[in-house]
Image 1: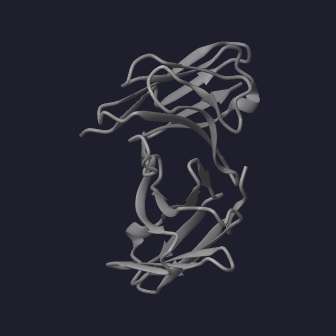
Image 2: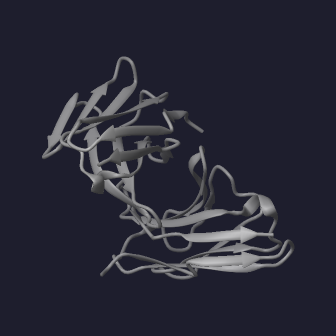
Image 3: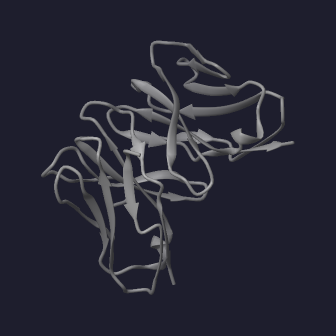
Length: 112
Length: 108
């Protein structure tokens, strides 16, 4: 089915390791987003990309970097993972000017 | 960011109605949304309401919006076990702000 695909689904990292979370959408959406979900805190925006070639910080960008590789793909990188980055990460996409998002199924990341 | 508040837990018996409440702070919100998250899955858009409406009905779902009190609710009629999930309200003022989520448990 068309939609937003995230890889990997699960990952365990040691403190200080780096990794990249991948996200791809096949709906020709312009805008893409990375959120983290923590218990009792809802979803918090890490970074977003309003269109290909642009990226902007969200509410909680520290410790993360992003790359909008092309219109389809938006990756999230942790350069030096910390236990505070243990979370479930969701990628989402939308058409420009539309606020209905399509979400991926999430990446559960544990940093030990 | 904006504050979007929800109670964390709700339990109802199968067949009863569920009411999930949400309060928000930004009166300039253009759309307000309800998303459903089933275990191990991403969020799926359930329904939404434009800010100049006060009610929207969609089969078993009724959304009520009180703009004066900045209060949004989602009523699920004849709640089924398949409705067990986490429900997030969200407001959009160009950027999305999600609530903390309400975990709904339906007791058979």
